[in-house]
Length: 156
Image (cartoon, rainbow, N blue to C red; front, side):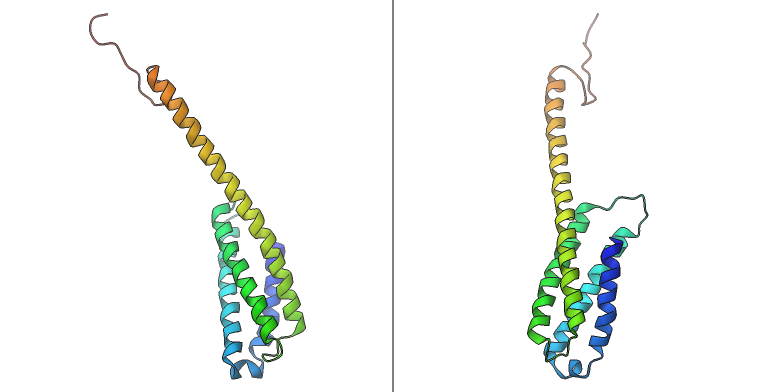
């Protein structure tokens, strides 16, 4: 996770040069790129919040999957925008290459996070099924995991 942060931060450092380019202020197409990069920066901040909560604390794969899905969507739009507007908005080749590499890493992290989220959901589903099955049998036998026990009424 730290590896992706350093590369993304490097891309934004290069993007700082890109944002101050004179042609950037001249075109609404160039301003669209700024919106894409700002959205990306916000998503990266969300990822940083997930990972900064402690070294021993595990990241919730469902939250990570959601954010990385948005990041990949943003990266796809960003790559398309950069390809279409590279010359007009004076986007440096280094930024285009760095952005493409970061996008590939985002796709890998998305796959890992969403895979873990799917496994987690499957395990929760199985646990609920087992609990339901065990609760039904135990209820018929007069107790068990449900916490109920039928006591005979009347004189013993």
